[in-house]
Length: 424
Image (cartoon, rainbow, N blue to C red):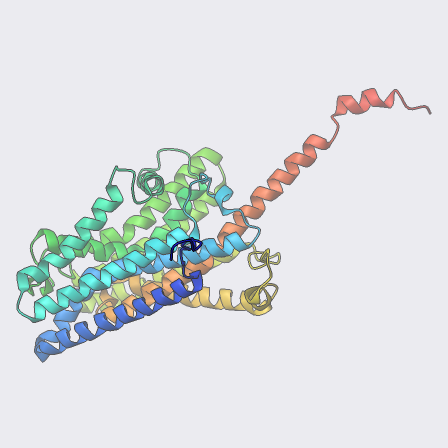
């Protein structure tokens, strides 16, 4: 209407809570669609091939799902550190542009979306006779993720990717002084040894064009379950950590570094004695090598458990990791509660023992069981991170307080000069 006052347009922005709920609903709908399509695709297969079909599909995608789980848990670690007094950025010597827990969760979300989508496409295409298209799905996924990780362009968190790749290189070749991020990430890699083993098997089958075929199922094939590469990849993270300890001993001359190296060396006989089952006579395995494998498994589990409690953690003082700046329900539930310590000790011991299952090639026939145990090992490592980082932060603050108190104390010469001013 002419002469009427114009009303400025106001942009209507939905609330963050509404957006979060909408995203959760979309995520659940997407998950249901993937489950429905995947289940129908599996049911189309003949009964005798169904298990092999699932096993192969699971092999390509389960390591990436476990990586996504580890990223989610790491985001939870960072969220707790940010709520508490532990300055994790100083502990890891991170720059001001390091990823926050929100950005970590964003990466985990994308990986959680992409991997099951590719797996669903693989199941659907294979069950409908499009074998060549189905075989291309895991290959494309691995290539795209590798390109994103190694991309030199300033996108997808270039500085954080560079930090990760540089630290990984320092772990593989410990030719320099070992820093806290170096051995911290190497310890996490030991928990992911089964993931690396499955990635190697997947890459092997892709390179030899065995995707979406049953040629790989032959145990004696290049990429079969008897492959020598499996124990070699399993032991690699432990060897890297072993040489890190030797490098630390060279720099510091502390005997605890040698004891720590001994701990990682106890995983080597567990892995190789298990692999020997496929290369010796069954009677010899049962009468000689299996008792040795059981003994080495017990030694490795108990030694690792002792080191977690005695060296990596400091349970002699009350943990402050759950004493948040802004008190919440979690603070009341976890801070100062004795059950937290009993839970950590008990679960760490049990999961250290089941750890042997995933390191042993002859116990890995049930892929769902191995997947569950590997996921539980990552949960154990997730718990370990809280106490290990807090212990390092306590050491840093104690050292800083000692240096400050030393600077404030007068020197011997100052005290002698000052004593002349006093009258007796």
